[in-house]
Each structure stands twice: as structure tokens, then as C-alpha cells.
Length: 351
Image (cartoon, rainbow, N blue to C red):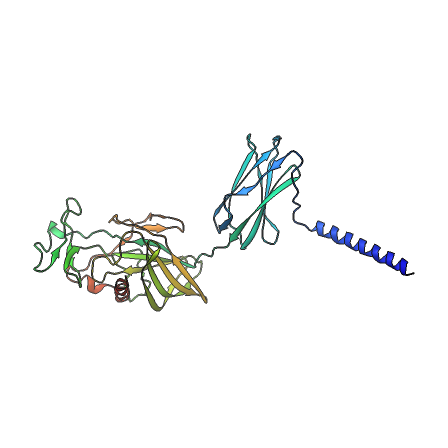
């Protein structure tokens, strides 16, 4: 009896294992096998890691007779589910390639399987979902146009006693440029126009968006957002040039709306250097901290064109900026946004 029970038990185990194995195969997402004898199929990617919207290049070689059949390329997500599938032709040299956009929704390790003639090869890459901040920096002006003298006259020539005159009259061929002694400075320098990317200051209706240098914050959402801006960092060559911890400032932006952060000078015509500069604005939105930043930018064009950042590179904005009528010659500094002046005066002390 004991022998018979043992035989029955063993038979049941074998049967159960067989059923379990069959069930596992039935629900498998893929079956990676080697290529048939005498055939080699390779697959590689141009990088081992990618982020959202990176371009992925997949390529390989089929070493066998090309019978015109395509290579099937499948992308498996970290849970082994096929998320993309393609048919790619093999050229006369046995090579194939494919470019795809990395718009996956899950961070983790992905598998690329390339299959032909009932055989497959595979490779892997890491993918990271890159979250776009709800509010980003888009448009930047570092060198607004110089302000021209009325009636083709020069200014402060000769220099005042004890002062230095840096106001050349040939900065713009055939025209005269305004110049002035800025607050706290003993040099006379050319004046820049006060322009703006928008009619709305990021500090609300009581502040002015107009300044010789500025950047725009842009709401990428399809809804109205409120952020709490708490820090602004000025970068030069990717390193901190100056920063200011701000008292949390609420900024309200409608769907796809912009506001301008004016960078008013404190003791010279321009607050910031014009070469290799970038910005990083840190804020809180819906309980999470974000930082919107830009790569370095050099702006020495001294014209009405402004720079637009599309998330990858700098280009000139298609539209013209809003040119603001100039203030009276004697009091340009006094009408600068108070917050902007204090912020960037402190920045300069920390250089």
C-alpha cells in the first residue's frame, strides 16, 4: 500500500509540474532563442541609458542569406510587456537600423529583441522618465539694444571732474548713444533700452517687468497654476555666479501664460555678464520642489532679438519683444523694480 501511494504521489507531482510549465509558457510575453545554425543576428543600441524624448538608435547585422524577410524588433518594458514593435528591412550588406523616440512611461530596464527566421537576439538599456517642470524658463534677454541720443547729440563730454568717460560715440555707426553715470559708479557708460518679454511681471501688478536684462517664466500646463518661487541662481559656465534666497513669492499663471522677471541694474547699465550665462529658478508646486534651468548662453548682439530655449538648444525667438518707452534721462535707476534691484545688488556682493 505504501508503495502504491508513493507511485500515485510521484505521478501527481509530475502531472502538476507539467501543467504548471505549460501554463507558464502559455502566458510568456516572448521566447528568446538563438538564431538557426549557420546564422548570426546581432542587435545593439547607441547608448546604455536614455531619458524621456531621447532618440534611440537600434542597429545590427544579419549574417546569412538575405531572403527579403524583415527583422522584427520588439521593446519590452521592465514588467516584460511589449510596448513597441517594428518591422525593419535588412540591406544588401546584411545591416539594419531603426530610430525611435524614447517616450516610455515607466522608469527601469528595457529589453530590445530582434528576431528573424524563428531566432532572436536581445540587448538591454536603462530608461528614466524625465519630468518636465510645470513652469520653465523660455525666453532670455542679456543684451538689450542701446538707447540713442535725441537730436544726434553726445552726452557728458567732456567727462565730469573725477569721473571716467567710457561713452564712445561710434558704438552704432552714424548714430549717437545715450550714456550716464549710474548709481554708485564713477564711470560714464552707455545706456540700454528697457524691454520685456511680456506685459506681466512675475512679482505681480505692483512691479515692473521692464529691464535691460530679463527672462520669462512659462506655464507648460493646460490649467492655471500657482507656484511659490523661493530661489534664483545665476550661473556662469554652469557654476554659481550669484544666488538669492527669496521670500516665497506666489506667482499665478494661466494656461500657457508667461511672466517676465526683470533684472534691473543696481550700480551699472547691466547687472549680469553677457557671456556663458544661465539661470535656475527653484519653486514649489503642489507640494513638490522643482528647478527650471537653462544651459549657458552668450548674448552680445545688442539688438531687439531675444533668445528662446526649446528645452534642447537656444534659438532666436520669432517674435519681437515689447519695447518700453524710456524713462527720463536723469532718473532711470529710480524706477526699477525694488525687488529686482535688491536681489541682484546682493548677488553682485556674493560674486
